[in-house]
Length: 399
Image (tube, rainbow, N blue to C red):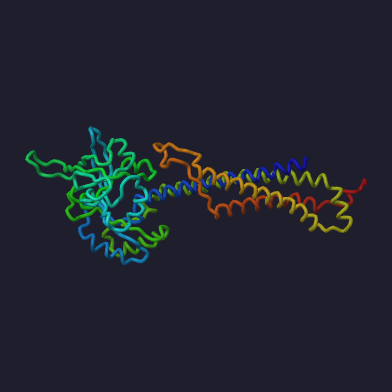
């Protein structure tokens, strides 16, 4: 009976450790995957005017000043605005971003291209690209979901309508321009793939009526977790002229909620290990009751309280070590299988990602194992003390 309870205790510890590793791996994988996708289509730091209606006209000088700040890798101008897009009788409101494909910093976006390249956005690139696209010099790259909704294929023309107005014989009318679809990108985030499109910086300036102005400057850094130390330097550089924000500040609510959920899940699932600890207490208490005669004989032969206590502490620690090791093996193997073969699929229209990622951090595993071993050790203290306090005279009185 004692052996059965001991086995249940080991299984309980293993189950708790495995559950903790799997859940924290899901939370970590979800956070890192979203962060990678967010940073794949957004800059690490952005510098924009306080009034969104204003534009930056001296952006070349500003880029030169930004590049002198330590820790910054690239800086480039961009145009960002909402426009209407239409094709073959279908229309939708989208976010249009104008970028300079010739400047460094577009490598991350290039990773998400499923058709064409970022370089195809340059005017006149149609004559030299593999598709040999005819038509307007202005090119556009659409999110894969947006292209599907519009039914826009590579080489087809679409129409963009901006909020900027132009004078015509009929009066002021919104600016419109035809663009040729030259590629698709797929970030894995449904909202981005459904609402984002990219054109060249010059084409965006013309469409938005900005002339030489831009919406802001986007900056990439070497270490994305050190942006908090770079932002104050940039704010001091411009003396409050611009609004400087990093990716953590722009997504603070979202990532704070993820972090809070991760802590809450760790606390809740640790209760499983506590339940297993009660099994350890029960099994050791029953062992003390079963072996009280043996304990009495050992103490009568000169065994100290410390040595008796050590026997039962060792028993409990072994249960904790074996259960923790088995739980680690089950948890890490389950995470590897689920992440490698994408076992848990998600609906991209409901969630931001198409499958549930699992990312095991060694620091998380170390904390889980440490907590499990500590709880297992504490669970052995009471039974071990009871065994050490056993009176040998009472234990062997009737032997």
